[in-house]
Amino acid sequence: MEEKVKSDLKKIFGFSQFRGNQEPIVDNLLKKRNTFVIMPTGAGKSLCYQLPAIVSEGTAVVISPLIALMKNQVDQLNAIGINAHFLNSTLSKSESNRVKSEVLKKKTKLLYVAPESLTKDENVAFLKEAQISFVAIDEAHCISEWGHDFRPEYRRIKSIVAQIAPNLPIIALTATATPKVQQDIQRNLQMEEADLFKSSFNRPNLFYEVRAKVKNDSKKHLIKFIKSHKGKSGIIYCLSRKKVEEIANLLKVNQINAAPYHAGLESAVRIKNQDDFLNEELDVIVATIAFGMGIDKPDVRYVIHYDVPKSLEGYYQETGRAGRDGLEGHCLMFYRYEDIVKLDKFNKDKAVTERENAKLLLQEMAAYAETGVCRRKFILNYFGETMEEDCGFCDNCKRDRETYEGMDLALTALEA
Ligand code: ADP
Ligand code: MG
Image (cartoon, rainbow, N blue to C red; front, side, top):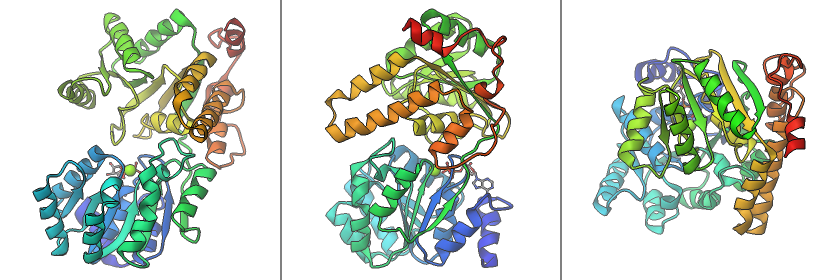
């Protein structure tokens, strides 16, 4: 790799070295090879395309599924002096024209594009005229119906990219590729030949635990758990807005410094609660899964799922927000089978295949919750990794039948 690239890492991003696979990935993309990156959340995927974009001629097109995330990244790049823009439905006609003329003047290094905008004829025509260095597809699991976040427009990306220019290098990035999702992505993007860079998904500093969810008992356990982590930051995930409000209130009346976060709150309130959490004014945020994407708080000490998530990928993502600083993070889930049944019912109006997919994901989730084997083994296995030894750092590994809080999932199953 050229020295310039390494010096830009320091000069522009302020990082003294590459992390994990970043260096070979950057190198590979700069050689104009198709590149497939599977790396856990928080590992530093953005840099894998941002740095090559900056040192390449022309503009890199970055496809990203969330408008908020897009804006966030562009703001961050602008703040370090990089010319970056986005094209999405929030721009007025004249704003998007301004962005396009910047790109055509070859000033823009990164152009973030929403998948919906990419597929518009006028934008395809514009991109054909521009000098594009490569295309980055962030959150590439959105391509797959087997993933937890399927976005139909993502499946059209490949044909659009082929129209923009022949042989444009593609880098696809995701944090959530089970072997099945991975295959699906590669097939859809016609990049079976791409060089694959897959990092381990093991997060050795996270402790995984599942407790039976028994009506009022679990609320007591929740409060007790939070109080035993006084002054520490934690996230509690609930399935519905109503449940978020209920649990947030329950915590408040128990003198816990908590606030809710969900899409039904006024945006000013939502932003304030998020900021308060990031600035340590709040210890606990009780949230739906609307909270967390792109949030980078290093010292979250625990993530609690008060309701069972819809997939193990989702669970892994959400728990991944704990312990980013490398120190211990506790991932606790309250589980009862009825919650799985409830979630399955929510899907009853969906198309048949979609419903079946969702059901399989749920069954996998239930299997995780009910398993007696090492939880880390189970999770890593789901992501296609094998682990020889038990981890020794999850409830199943640590369980000592006498001291474990007297709750056994089997018992609850009987009660249910
Ligand atoms: P991902 O997209 O994989 O979830 P991000 O690209 O958002 O992760 O990066 C997560 C964090 O890691 C960011 O705060 C980023 O600044 C930081 N980071 C990325 N690469 C490096 C590096 N080489 N050295 C130090 N910090 C890094
Ligand atoms: Mg990312």
